Length: 239
Ligand SMILES: [Zn+2]
Image 1 (tube, helix red, strand yellow):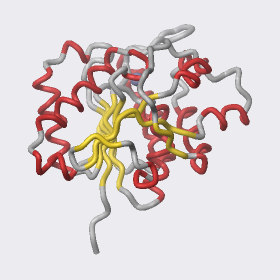
Image 2 (cartoon, rainbow, N blue to C red; image 1 turned 90 degrees about the vertical axis):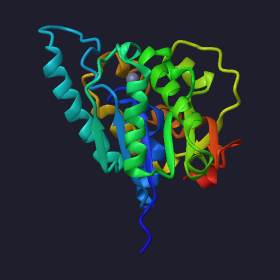
Image 3 (tube, rainbow, N blue to C red; image 1 turned 135 degrees about the vertical axis):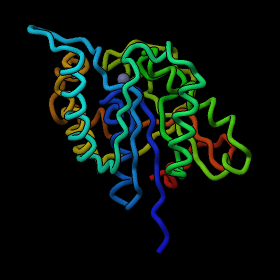
């Protein structure tokens, strides 16, 4: 029997997996694709509301529990939650980040790598560092390896950003929509696993369940490389 393909999702913080491409990951895992998540930080610096404030260590442990729960809903098989500084990925040597991503590429030999588009979705510097890292590594791969691995960069259209109160970064690219309607409940449940993220969840508090389902029924690809070439994302092929 052939080994199932692996998708490697590479993000910065616990919760990125759910917000950025949770529906696509759930869809793929339901079809037997092995999904693996690498998150470079444990999100220990995220803003807390109320008191007492949790220490970074306690918050990191809590976010890891939330991530495990979210991953189990999305069918993510393996999590690698690394301990690079939350809010400080731009202070880590790019060559170190390269080594880490190379290690996971060698280990899993994924059929595809998922991450943020260039803008880092929210403009968060950690997100942008990860987006740059994946683009850099893609370029560094030999032609043969590049041809074996798809690279998929996810974003949100301006309409969704506006509704979520995400800082509007001029989004000029045409995004391709991935229909993840069937998995929207899982995506929402995964998003809500991250209960420590009070400010992020506040973005969706005013919406009722129907409006939320509508808002998160699709995911959006900004850039897709298949066999080493930039293509218009073949959405059917993706999920
Ligand atoms: Zn994040």
